[in-house]
Image (tube, rainbow, N blue to C red; front, side):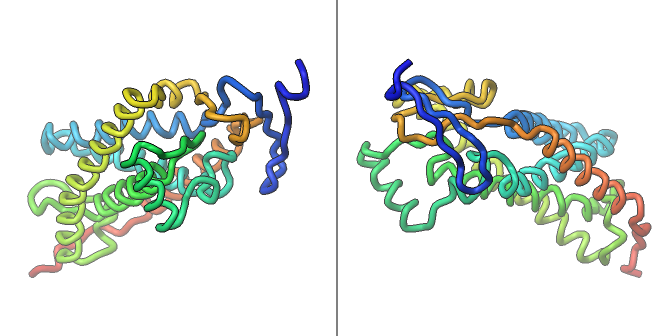
Length: 250
């Protein structure tokens, strides 16, 4: 192997060593990000299915909601302390740069990105916020007939019903965003031969040039586990110490 075939650089943000071969693939997505992604898919689908199955499945619907909250909270924190390609400041771009990328994309001249491209990056943020809002509002929910959310006791009956409405209507926005996300994945597969689904299983993506930031050196799984346990514990504490909801409409 010659010097031109391989080089090593150090990430200035946290000192992670990353190796960047001149050709082939790079390890982009760490194990926590990949587990987060597919577990979130299962949790979202599970929440939707248990909601459609009716009131007898409400407790399972709630548990899927808890899962979404823990996952979204983890990913938001991971965007600051995670590995190189998972950190927000390494893939989020401002409105001007994002618009410029969109224009070049329409013209068929968009540059490739080893991590998230500017449009995909903002889609990630939108989905995280949307899923977080929907899951959290569900905790305060009240169907006014059979079921009530575990945190409904913290708010008035009127506020609970308002949050229930937001919980229901936000689903359609999230579903639309997911549809766009899936179409984008398909478009990448067709037009530039990028298998993003496979990459989210293996963690590896094809580099477009040797200038791309290279392989992450570690998945930091221990840190991800610690964050997840802490978030789950905090949520459990809040839920188990919530006051009993009282109907204040009379």
